[in-house]
Each structure stands twice: as C-alpha cells, then as structure tokens.
Length: 631
Image (cartoon, rainbow, N blue to C red; front, side, top):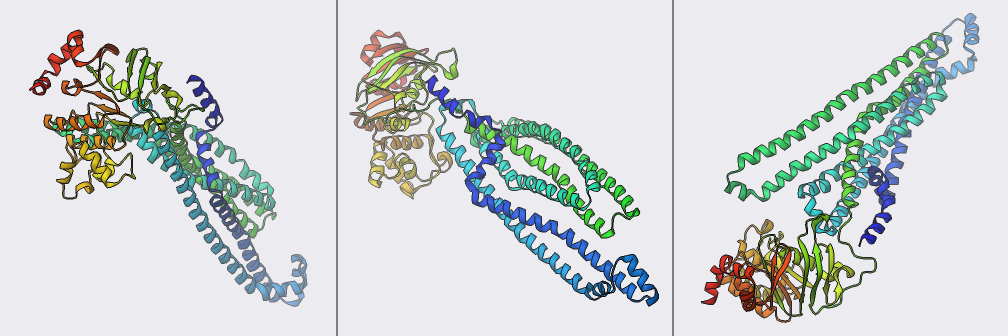
C-alpha cells in the first residue's frame, strides 16, 4: 500500500509543483473557443480605444490648419507670399485646407463614433465570453471538488470539518471565478494597453516616453510587495470564514440540542467571537489596501507631473506641437490607467491565489484507501469473512483500537459484536467494507483480501445500516431505493415490510411519496431507522451489517424487525452490533471485545458460562431486555 501511495504521489508531482492560481487558470484550456473569443475581443476593443487619440490629433490639426488658411487668405496679396514661405505651404495647399476643413472634421467625428461603437461591441463580447468562461470553470471546479469529496476515505473527514469543505466548494470557487472573469481580464488588458501605448508614445516622442517608463519600476515594486502581503491575509480570511460557517452549520443542524440545553447565549457568544475574528482580519486587509491605493495614485501623479514639465519645455522650444501634445497626453492617460487598476488586480489576484491554494488542497488530497492499479472486480460472494491478525490505529497513531483480532464468519452466519464503548465494535464493521485500511494483518472476503479488489465492487455487495441514520431530502421511496434507483414499487414495498416500516408509511396521506424533510426531520428516530434498514435490505446483499440498528425502536417494533431480519438473513452473512441481549443471543457467533481485543467467541449458552465479561454485560447492561425476552 505504501508503494502505491508513493507511485500516486510521484505521478501527481508535476501538477502539485505548479502554483495553485496558475493551475486554476489552466482550466481555461477546457474552454479554448470561449477564451479565444474573449481575449480576441479584448484585443480588438483595446486597438479601437487606442485609435481615438490619433483621430483627435487629426481633428485638432484640421481645425488649426483651417484657421491658419482662412487667416492667410484674408491677408493682403503683398504679404501672402511671405506668410506662405514661413509656413512652408503653397497657395493651392492653403486653399485645400480652407475648403476641406469642415469635411475632414466631420469625417474624423464619424470615425471616432465608429471606433467607439466597435469598441463597445467588442467590449460586450469580451465581457460576456469572460463571464461564460469563468462560470464554466467554476462549474468544473465545483464538480471536481464534489467528486473528490465523494472518493476521499473516512479518515479525511475525521480530520476536516464540514464547514471547511463547504466554504472551499462555494466561496473559494467564487473568488477564483471572479478573478478569471475580472482580475485576469484586467491584468491582460493592462499589459496589452501598456505595451501598445508605450510603443505609440515611443514613436510619437521618445524623449517624453522615457520619462513615463521611469515611473513603471515603482509600480512593479508595489505590485510585488503588496501581492506578497495580501495573499496570506486573504488566506487567513478564508480560514476564519470557514470557522464561522462551521459554527453556523453545526448550530442549524443541532438547533434542537441547543434549545433543549438552553445554550443559545453561549452559542451566540461563540458565533460573535468567530465573527469578530473575521471582521478584524478584513480590517487588516483594508488597512493594507488603504495604503496601496494612495501610493499607486502618487506614482501616477508624479509621472504625469514629470511628463507635463518636460512636455512644456518642448512646446516652449517649438519642438512639440499642440496637436501632438494633445495626442501624447491622451495616450499618457492610457499608460497610467493600468496603474489605477493595479489595486483591483492585486486584490482579486491575492484572493484567488489564497482560494485556489485551498481548493487544490482538496483536489490534491491523497485518500488513505485507494484501489490498487491491478485491483480486480470482486465476483459475486458467498459471504465468508475472515479477520486474520488484524490490528488497527487511526491516523498512524501508536494507540491501537484493534489488536490481533482473529475470527472467521462462515457464509450465512450471524455474528454479534458486544463490548463496552470504545472496545472496537464499530471499527470492525468499518474494516469489512474497507472504509479504513487495516494497520496490520488483513480482512478476507471469500478468500479475497479486500485491498486487492475494487472498492465499488466490494461495497455494492454489502448492505449497511449505520448507528447514525442519514436520510436525504426527497420522498420515503427515494430514500429506500437510494442504493437501487431502478427498483420497482413492489420491491420497495417488500423491503419496507421486511423492516416493519410499511404500516407506518401507509399511515401518511401520501404514503411512499411523503417527503422526509432535511435529514428526515419529519420522521421519528425509530421511523428513520426502519427506513434505513429497508434501504439496506433492498440491495439483497450477501453481507449485511447492522450497527445497533434497533436502538431507536421500542421493544415491540424491535421484535417485528428482528423476526423479519431472522428470515431475511438466512443465507446472508450478518454482522450485528447490539446493546440488547435479545439481539445477540440467537447469533451463530457472539464476539466479545475488550479494549480492542477479542475476549471471547461463542454462542450465548457457551459464553454465559465461560466468559466473565459476557456474563457481566448480560447481568448489568442487558438484563432488562433479557427478562421480557425469556418471558
């Protein structure tokens, strides 16, 4: 198993080496067409935007030339020649400037309007496609996270809170989506706008362009410094948001317990404390960005002031014309515009980087229970289960929950597991369907080591009723047929009758179409447990596991369920965790556990004479059930 994990880790090493945000952006590869349209439209819209200052310069030059031409034409003929010589123009050129000024002006205005329309159209295409692409990536990430969560082993959930997982699949995904839809577009637009603008400025006036370029290193330093400062702050924000969500989720799920123990005030204080932590963390983020934005504007203003000074000097010296300066000043706005977006880009990028790191922590998580590369599909089983020198400890702990457990369950036998709390009963039934892997030894089913077969083929042949009953939103029929959605109504009813659930189901006005509410809120504990039993029986498994499955029903109902189970478990290997002697006494084998070890194995009659621990359980914990059973 360790070799398999090492191979798995090595195969994913190239992926995990990449920065999480870069990996998230890599999801754009799944939406190449939409991405191409979004960024192609962005490029065209940017070019259309950059064409406007050139047209404005032409407008100014047209107006200026027209005014000069009219002034020259109104001069006396004696001085017209001198004026033409000084202007370097011929009379024909002056007349053309005077006659065509209005036409050229109208043409320039029309072109500006056309470029504005083109820019607006392609900006719409870019925004729409970017949103479409980002929503697609969010959709894919959510599906990947949910799929991964479904495949992770039980030990992962033992170490991670539900609220943490929920936030990563929702809020963290949304922050990555927002960056791809907005932040990444802004970053690409800023780079594109800056490169094209500097190129045009350099061709227009390279001396002034060098002044602009001199301010860019300061902006780059700001970007790097604040980016490094912001990401861990946003990472902490997400952690504290997860803590807040965990408290909220626990309280909504356990609201009856909170009210029953009058703990509303305590829980409010606990929630308020988590909310305070989140608030103060956001204020730390706000303090960072309250410094960032003024610094960005300061750099921009200093750059503009320097350009204004040197441009004014060139105008005074006659080396820079007013129209050229007007064009340069408009392009200068485009050069400094990315600096104004810098704070937004840093904020979105830092949030997305922190969130993508949390997302890929789940996607890169290695399950403790994985199929071997050469795992086989388990054929239909007879139901023989053997524990051979099995020892188990959670999370590689040195404290063993099970130690040197050995027993064999023959096909069709009923095995009862008894012992005090913490003796290892639930751990045994968790090892049979391979919810956990043994630390030492092996678990065999029909001679197959459960680690050598595919998990789905193993678990599909095992019916399980856990101690904690979980129902899903939907109807009673949906919950009974959860493991076999294609089951007929007759099969569902047959399973319900076997679990002594049919009678109370038919008392509902909607019968099997009755909604059960969230987690079965509309049903009693005993009703939920009987539906869970019916759900397991509908699979007709060759191995049936009942984890204290009659603990929430009264004695009469237990007898109904037990009688039905006695008939249905014929030919099936059944493991029953029981706290009542009536459930265990008819078992083919009773395994008595004590501190993770097998203390005794035998039938009720044998153990009552030979096992002090079993006798103590019989006389103390289960004597109340034994009396009515004997009666």
